[in-house]
Length: 308
Image 1 (tube, rainbow, N blue to C red):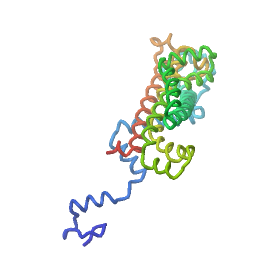
Image 2 (image 1 turned 135 degrees about the horizontal axis):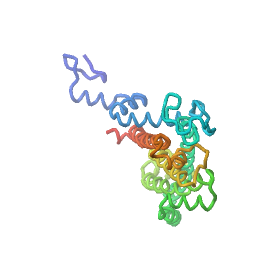
Image 3 (image 1 turned 90 degrees about the vertical axis):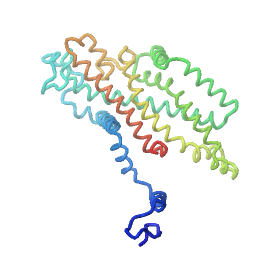
């Protein structure tokens, strides 16, 4: 009797320790789906977090369509109505259904956070690639500019930029993007400094591969794994920043159903009508936790060392 590798097995059909090790080495890698199932089964909290993140994404895509009531039209017959079958999350101070506003607001909160992270990652990746690959004076100049932005607390700097440009959601996105890219620049620069010394990069340089092709084909693809994980992690943080700016009046303005603005509107009713602020706050909390745990799942899926 022979094993799967053509090596004779024991008479009882079992494999020796060496044969089992060889089977493990030469076995095909598991599919992404099987690996995902393994990662989620291994850690129930990560599974719950991934479900929260997926639910938030579905709310952002379809929440406005599923909302049972208009999000911004008052209903004076339901002012501060408590949670019930008609209003699962209750109603606010002018009778608007909180459940409908939470569903509709998911689109605003997550969309703005995703745009901020995408712009920050794009600028930071470009700066990090140029700095790490060029080195020398270019690296010094770009990193000193990055340090200038990092020297200020991000939220305080975003507040100053928003107040200077004017209070609109567009300016909020620009302000947050302006303070978001330095972290990505540092992350990508560190990756490039390691990658440019690898053997395959040296071999490509010896055969005359140009700088642009070198970066595009050999360096950038190998920075995508930490970049994707960091972007997933930052979605929740960016949403906190967006909600924070809206809460202090520098983001979404009434009657926009953005979660931070909804909490700001409900400050005067926390004791008498707790549901007006509690459910938008719960939505923010679960979404941030979900995207943080989703980042852990992505790291396990994309980084073989994390699964060891």
